[in-house]
Image 1 (cartoon, rainbow, N blue to C red):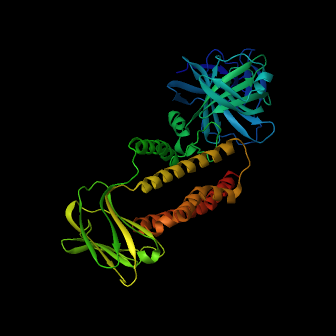
Image 2 (image 1 turned 45 degrees about the vertical axis):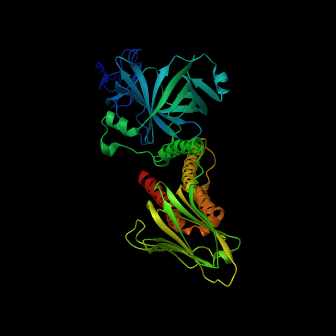
Image 3 (image 1 turned 90 degrees about the horizontal axis):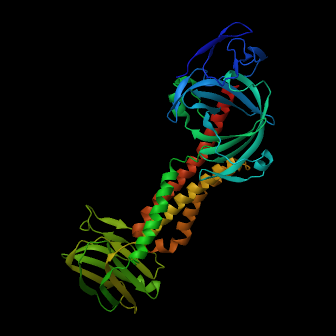
Length: 486
């Protein structure tokens, strides 16, 4: 690492180690806090001995660590504060004998890495202030802010003569996790390429003790939106939606199967008709259709196999026997008494001797229904539900990302009620879509839909409760942090 050179402080005679190579211009005494001018007979330029604010951070002068594959030593530190605000941060000067100087910026647990670049077009300060976006190294950057910073505190070595309350004008652009910082020096503009670093990696690199490590609890303009749950789901949703749509279009598949029985039934006599299922691919559908709900309610429909009823349906109940891929019989919901159309999906085993049995409830009334049985039927509506679910996952992710961007852009916060509404809005939209738009479908197809709806209602309640509970928890935690900080 760095070759260590020692001098004596001209103020208090304390020994000072110089770690930063030949470009170092000043060093601040770690004992008396005097700023020593190395190039001018070690004159004392100022003093930070009476600084009253808390300037403790996890990093200390002399710490060594590897960043971007380069071994660095922390040789200097500057605490900056904005002129118009109480906002402050610390810039740590890094030195590598092979790669020169770089910066770490530390801000309430957020850490960015900066390296000066000369690969930038020449512009005046006024010209740069007019730019809203810029392109650099094939990346587009948006302007973040222009501000003036002043020096409040200095430690260690610096490569220029810096004094307390020196001011610096800065223009910053961002394209998370990267950024561009343009600083107005005395005679030229200095350009720095920025990159956001995960603090855990930097703490580990510089061997910061666990008790000294600070976690951030706010946003940073260079920190990319880091939704760990919905982001991978959103990426999957985009690809899955595209692939499903392509497959449906490519195979021209509308979910229809092959008809194995199609007949009209009157109430004059009991109908018993044989049919066979030649494939177990997909499902078998049974469709009942009439001109009026009264006609439909006048029939009992059964499917028999080996002289046993394995499935029956009427206006009062629906029954599935243990012989259809189940260990026990299942009694399901009845169809809607106002329905004129009922469609049921069954998973019938491949066989040649099924019997459809249709009997009227009241043979005095002249009624007729149409019955159709199809094999190899796929439930495209469930593909639709799946695509719709993926779409809402994508919508949730985009809504969260937009909210994060609004915070970065310093737009007005929505408040607690706004946060609750924003958090549950996508789920409520999905909920309303299911119960309003698809309600007619679920009325005559409760056999498969009922469980789906109950599970979804449970999900809605869970998400709503989570959004409600987490807000007071965050407020309590923020209050605790404030008290602890005071």
